[in-house]
Image (tube, rainbow, N blue to C red; front, side, top):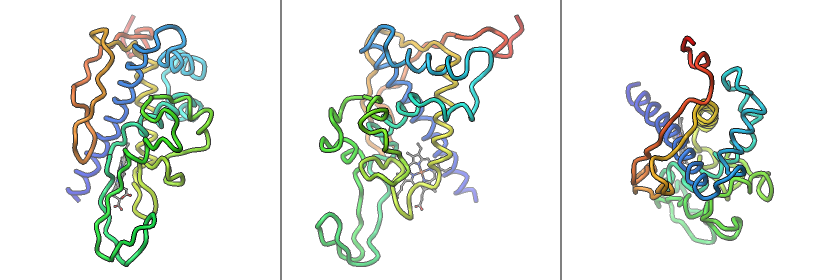
Amino acid sequence: MPGFANELISYVGIGFLAGLMTIDKCLDNQHKTQGKNDRVTVQKTEIDKQVGRERLVNESDTKNLVYLKAVIKETLRLHPVVPLSVPHEAIEDCVVGGYNIPKGTRLMVNLSKIHRDPNPWSNPHEFQPERFLTSHHHLDVKGQHFDLIPFGAGRRMCPGDTFALHEMRLTLASLIQQFELETSSNEPVDMSESFGITVSKQMPLEVLLAPRLTRDMYGLST
Ligand code: HEM
């Protein structure tokens, strides 16, 4: 039981990290596409339109935040949380992608590589969430489309996918609704990754938060 609890806590952390990296990406693009059409503005506008500023965003709102969901998908594509997935062992001889795999072979699936394959993905290294509203609108991250499998696929795919997606959507939507986010310098956010079982940023994220809503929305008296 303690083992499971640790697993749960670390995955919750992973989900939150992915959320933060999403914010990083938003900030990154804020620098690249300054002006009213930048991607953070698009997300703010979407939340203001769907939820408004008179109440806090809640979980049931997130299904209507289509652009925010596209931003999360694009983040999971470019920065899969478990870049090499979890190793699998063949329990019988099989053929994968034309290669003969003898029973007992350990296989690792390079999600980062699959997600940046230039065949299905145009400009594969670019952060372009709009692709999930246009050319790739039919793709989800639930293990049905093998070009995008941040949670793996098949019998051993991540059982925490639904929880993680809800958590990321609500965390990101809440941050964007409630705070103006700025970096401390005018430099783009450094998105280099450290190598590890789970992905983490090489450079810590420094971000300045300023309230966006009225005091009472934060439970403060006026
Ligand atoms: C953004 C968040 C997350 C991502 C991207 C993610 C991704 C993954 C991936 C790629 C695997 C390996 C799947 C495979 O072997 O094909 C996995 C396994 C697993 N994940 Fe997650 N995960 C996330 C969050 C969570 C959460 C929140 C939980 C639990 C509450 C969780 C529980 C598990 C468990 C128990 C396994 C092992 C499943 C098995 O081997 O049968 N994950 N996850």
